[in-house]
Structures are given as structure tokens and as C-alpha cells.
Length: 130
Image 1: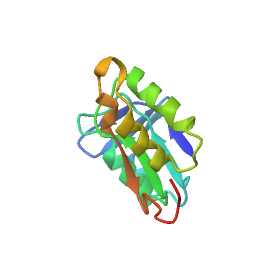
Image 2: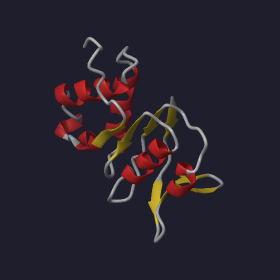
Image 3: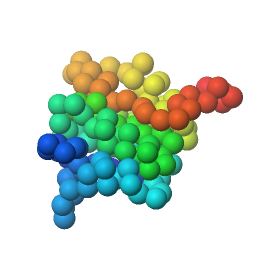
């Protein structure tokens, strides 16, 4: 599992993760020979378009599942969602995300954290019990 919590920025070329020592562009991520099978892009600071292109880059590099923000999400809401996601007790983060989003109201009635989406191959495995 790779969990990334950095801002996302965009320019004329593409989206990029903003790291301490520079930017890591989606094209550079897609060109990697191997990445983690599960990736969580918990970026509260994103472009208005979110981090979908970065999610697709991780899939192109070999990830099976990516959970990413679709647009800016308040940090408090995203932190709450991540806490619930990782404490769900299931190894299937996609099912855990779906359950949390279906059954939880955001802090103060703010459902901004619903702007988090799962991308990938075999998002819900039909042979697994819920």
C-alpha cells in the first residue's frame, strides 16, 4: 500500500504531485516499471479537476486499485475518512470506502469527502463476502 498526502498541482503539460524537492508528473508516474498494487492519493489540495489523471498514471504503472480525490476536499473531512478507511478492519479498501461513503455523514453535515473515488481493475471482487 502506498499512501500519498501531498498537494496536487497542474500546468500546461499535466498534473503533478508537489514534493519537497520538486514535482512528480503523471507522465513520470505512468512510466515507472513498478508501483504498489494499492495506492491512496489523499490530497486535500488539488486542482479543480482533482487527481484523477494521477490515479490513471498509477494504474498505467501497474497499480490494481487507486483511491483518489476528485476535487479539493477539506483536510478535516479527508483525515476523518482516512481514519475510518484504515480502521475498517478489511483489506479491501474499495469496499470499505463504499461502505463509509454510504453510511456516514461528513463533519458538520459537509459531505465534501464524498469527492473521493476508487479507480482500477476489479474494484469489487464478487467472490468476497461482505
